[in-house]
Image (cartoon, rainbow, N blue to C red; front, side, top):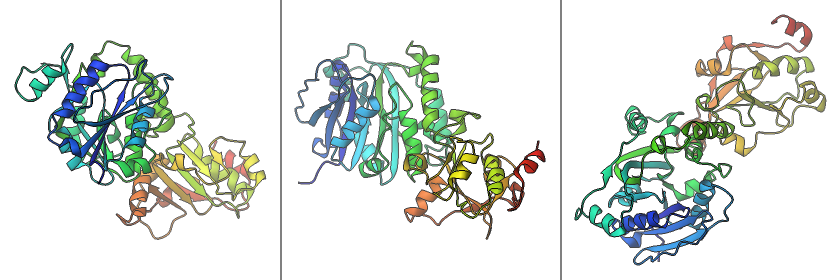
Length: 406
């Protein structure tokens, strides 16, 4: 017997009434209950949830309570999933009857799909009342305000059909589905996120850079019990600043991390073979690549110990190749094939890059590189414009070169 089409993964912590309402919503799905399984991923609740599954195919998987670990709980559910499509639904949601059917139909290979999260007040509602509402046999709950910024984002991107490097902002893990094999291949959620928010943006950007398409389904509605985060009465300022601080260590877009700080995962990864370069060329060229740029340099084991020492143990300079956790998150991959000094910022140089036959410096967007490796598009390697760099001669004296630009 083949496995289910959809695995519904529900991150959960000590909210039995909400969980019962969610499960009632799943019992009313137009997608047959033989086509999906339900995995409740318990984030260390004081008591294991006891569920009368009835006609649902379900299980509970648990992890120890070590603070808020929704990202890890989702991964726990992902590892237990067997469906071709994984649909994440937070426990404080009630899906409309056609929710799973719509999400499953739209979730193709390498596609991340976002449903529509709408807000209602379900305080003290019973599963029976939920069932009557969903079947149009009883009153609907009071509607609450939906966030304008999400509606604006979906409108501006044609429901994510015209997504770009900033569209991670409109992906919400509470109503998200994806191809299970693709999600496993990119590594699932980043478990370093141990507070509310941010893990969905990081995953969405990583999926985007790995070649995924993004889609929003405005008709696939899941009803959220209570207001959006902006209306929940907690310290939203502190919450958002904590989220941004951690996101900045993982998500490289300048909207998140700003400018001026050094990060272990840079926006621009520079690779260079400096085995035949003089020490003077290294001392002049490499600092120009770094400067105030959000960049890091990897020498693929071609720099000798003396050259590395001469660069002052700069944490942005690395002896070997760039590791996978960096290349999965950086937006740009730069190759430097001859000793040149960068005369502008990487942001401006990359924006002015184009297709030229030969150039000392070439750049690929990580998403373009991933699509080419998947055989979906031709390689789109672009060259920096000639005015963005200048050659550094082998006999250059680093002290004089530095004096000329001070």
